[in-house]
Length: 364
Image 1 (cartoon, rainbow, N blue to C red):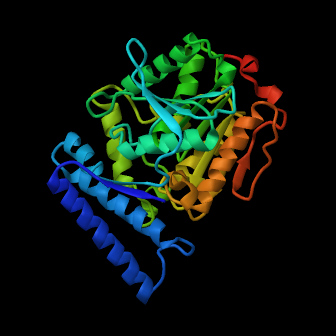
Image 2 (cartoon, one colour):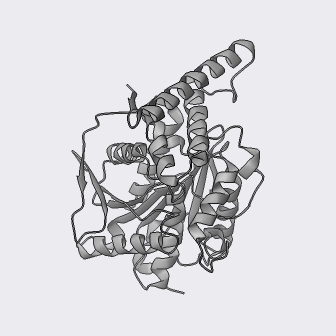
């Protein structure tokens, strides 16, 4: 059963609680006199989506990013609390991050995970989502606590990601047993890391999983602002995140956007997205561009879902479907079958995984 947590300063707690109450009343009133915002959305899903939007919007209006982070953490809901997953913080000289280890791992794989939050937030609820992933996939996860913007602009995050990858290799985990995964900005970091690994002469992982990934830090696609009314994140926020990522460096949007990279000779990429999220158009553009360049890529889109709908766990059928597909994709790397699904919009993954194993991926 979902669990809601209130914490932090009393002013943040009170405002967050009032925001949740107001959102609940708004949603229930609209449903009495009209209809759901999106047909098929449950009451809890609609309330959670619109509440998170209010929380992000207010966090952006606060005087400092530190206060914005504290405010966003003041009220959050865990879809599936108390899961049998151990969380262990890394220790020096290991990269900063946390291990999430399920009680009964059933795979030789290890997931290197990059959290979302626009590179500027690492909400507490994100750690609970990673715990949920470790439980659903039954695979150990090392989640990198990479440096955040705006305090640490690019290339800090990319450096931290590559350091963590080298760390796993140094622990004796072969590249074919590593899966890169991330959500939102973390999905951006997954895609950019594949390119950086190739440039650094490091072996590619067995698979890259990108959940609602940010694929262009500039303006791209009608959904970036056209889906504001549906999603928990908003178009203007993506542009601010992009500015924070660039900082005062000489970086163009193209230089820091996955869609503008050379996408040849990378590990297989599996992307999941929601059809109502603001990033869906740029995600589709990226998938088409990667496929055009010859990348092994598949894109699944759940039509009525929003950004990072995966976090709802067993409380949302679409989240459970997405988790099942992630498990199947990982099993595919060991010779399993990964057939196209109803949500599949682009399927460019080779049928025989042996064609794209890391040792067969050539550097440019």
